[in-house]
Image 1 (cartoon, helix red, strand yellow):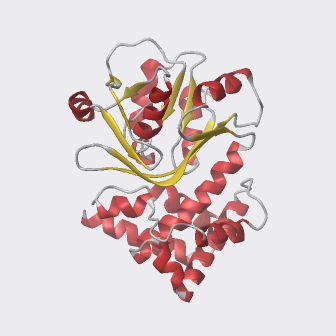
Image 2 (cartoon, one colour):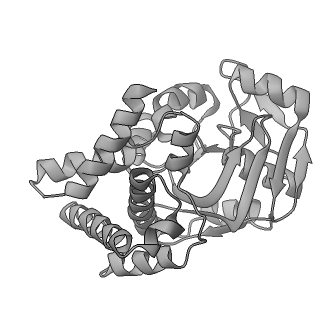
Length: 300
């Protein structure tokens, strides 16, 4: 597991809890913390504490069968360098990053066959002492071959990842799933950061509901222009999903801003905005969201 933060730490702890042999590739500071405290998860699905197997970049190790990348999208370049020594022929690379562009970058470095598709939906964060706090019922991870094939390695991976205290499933349409998630979190992070609010108060306002619908339509228009494999009527489906979300649900980008952290806006709104400009599509809300977050980043 490349990363032992809110996402990698959570799913990695669940796999270790099940009994799988998992090693966490972490930075020196996080390694020192985990050696001192152990890896601790507080979750609505049950707490777990483990003594993790740890590795820092540059330390010697045999290659791994599977490398799961759970870092932020803006950390991808560094992570690719870090994992190179631990990837051999036959190593499966499963990225859980937000966005879509990372697939192209990973296949360029590690080869087309090495990289499978993946995503996760989870509301989780690190508290001040490094404990992973997971507060909502959703803790979902999906993976699959990018061409949808049910290969021997995917079946083996399904057995390894399954049976944990998390909702981990194999998908035969993982690329479509990734585009759908990309649409959803780009809209969700967009409106919550723009309004500085959880989703509930936003949708209470008629104008807030219109804003959610409008940004979903803008995202959909760009994705159609890119020939992304999205379903017809996706904005309506995802708007309904937002209406059903917990009142206090926040986006990870909003939580990053509240902690004065760097954001993934370049990899979410920024990538789509770049494509919209390339194809001369009018996307005023995407422009507003991106400008808002970049102004925040400039003041950090």
